[in-house]
Image: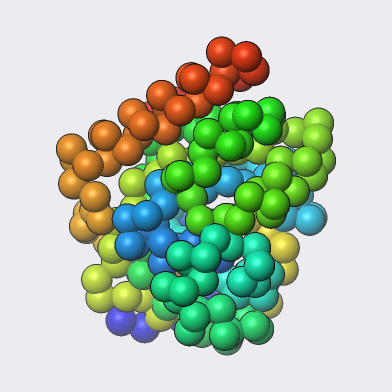
Length: 210
């Protein structure tokens, strides 16, 4: 269904819902069930990255994703997404995320432990950890739901640029989780166990949302 971008002074019958901008390939990996952890540290114009919302849509971006920044499986699985090198004027929203837990990652050993749970290449993941070293890398354990039918969103200038969060004028669709309750509980436990093992030498904190 069409989803117009908000205009100044316009009124809409929809609820304003947050959306997190994320690489299209990462969203695809989450919809494939491969990725359950997003590694974030915020955009260039943001002082730090926070997770102020427990549920949000995922808005696909293209301009910064490159094959050498991803693992080989993600590159092979979605070449059509990597072929797009500029942000389109209209995007499709095909996923929304429910946050189960947010871990603060500050040590390389912790980051290494998360490698099986995301599709970023190891060098790029390490670069994200080292960027702005005073701030921890946020590892978001999220349960992804499919949006059916997908929502078409016209991108206005306020939605562009290196920022993480935007508001979309639409309520969240009905739940349609990629992983069932048992599958997601197992993956979430695997993430926690992997980090706990890494933190025996490099303690760090984790905070649950919800």
